[in-house]
Length: 259
View 1 (cartoon, rainbow, N blue to C red):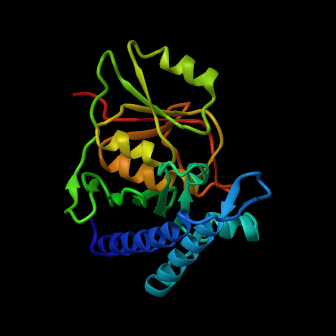
View 2: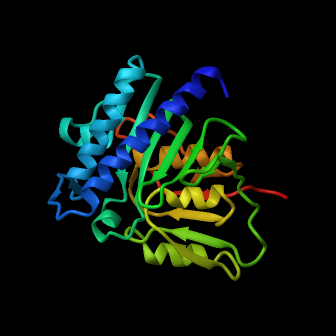
View 3: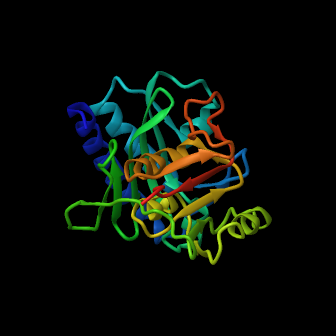
């Protein structure tokens, strides 16, 4: 991990925790819900969390531009602003936030070229944080505890764990995929936390047959890849970033290969 990226990881961690505070202030209230042009929900928690992240990143890393979900929704899609930029989803899993089931995250990633090289995934309700900044640096941190290293595991020959979305599952495609893994069992959870389950060796595969945007996946991918896993499109190439519309193709995230 370079000195610069170590500093930026610390900045992303602080920004994620600041966003979490904003989210939790709204979480227990009778908040309003609006529907954006893409027919996805948005709340004051999304907006306040993003504002907190943008303010801190602008103050402490002014030379690195930011692409953030709510800002993009308000201003429209524009080309990636630079070869190195932040990707921010201030509240990934807004539908889980609305259900108040705790399965939502704050996602902050740094993109260099087409690759996510740094990622923070923070779960506001549990206070758990996953973070990484390059190979072998993936960590899990409980509230008040020290970061501990995590690593993805090789999938067992039988009984693999397939993580999938609670609110966005394509059941037919998912069932067909699960059937290719003898004895597989499913693990359902919302948001980018699925990547982190793979990174920590608690699950083996996360197939996504449906629309995601780059800010949904970048931070989780950075953590998973640092833990030894991979995120591959259906043709077997690594999921890449800085696409003109920030829209991802279908993909399969997996843990470590080999023993």
